[in-house]
Length: 442
Image (cartoon, rainbow, N blue to C red; front, side):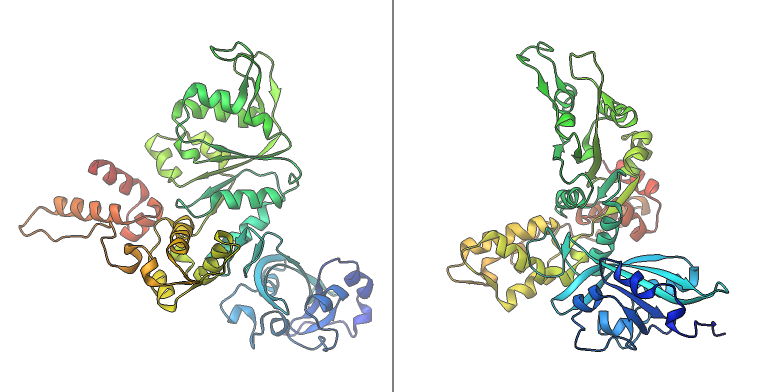
């Protein structure tokens, strides 16, 4: 069934002024994905001044596709908006004359007098915190797993919502936290990281809340804590899963009341910060096991973001290598031998991007020239030595099924570097069951 369209575009109220009032690229698209009208910013961004854009397909201009995005394996906001009748927002990788760019695309349906959708208004905003090519930005990548994470970062950054970053060690959680801060309305304020691992009760309170003069032996003067240091900015609690239960209640009180007292003080002080937390631990399993407070978990988990492991971003490896080599050595240009790149593509990177950086820095010190060869890589990358991974050995004698399960689970638990949630899915058991079985192994 065809929708009744406006007889001509002049029936759309103030079309030209509407499009030109939008500061970023904007385009009007019909139901067949054809461009009907554009604003100046769109023409400039895609350098279409000398080429007619009207009548062309939107996916042709932005993606160089010969079919709509949803037929090319991507999420199409126009298709979603047509199905729901509501505005839709997605993050796409657009092709531009400057190279591929991460673009936040928002689609709004335009209706005729009968309430039928006849056009779509699409507005576009290029990401200011990520790039698909080597540059000065903190975040670089183009793999689907990276784009999925970036879309969540772009959505939550301008808000005041608490964010918890989940992922394996070395995936760049602090870099993501800094990017969230810089893209927020608090970017003019401080970004204050707090390493939560190994904090004792007294040290935790003193570091976080500060203390008054004479509060304890050695407190010779008043000290401002990190909560006060983060005033007007962002407080980043790294490895929050390592905070002992006895200290979690103090953090919960701070988050719930927005108030705190310095150690040795009596006057309540108002806290003003945006909270971002991070952990490599499986907090849900810890809550089920009684090792992490359930009320604190829900307080900090308003907006969880999963960071992909490096092995889930294989197509980003050459880009990340290029970026890291530039950051490691600004005076000397290094390149990877073709065989070196092949070996790195085969490696699982249990330490993720942090491990990749260490591997490359070591290689630049070993290389006498500008080419990083296979012999400059560690043994575990070349497969020359033991990788330290457990290998399942089938027992020579007959053992019970329970013992066999424990033997296999011990091997898998040693080898697997991801979250328990993922491992539980791979083993086709619940997280609670997996946690119980792992506890039995201990």
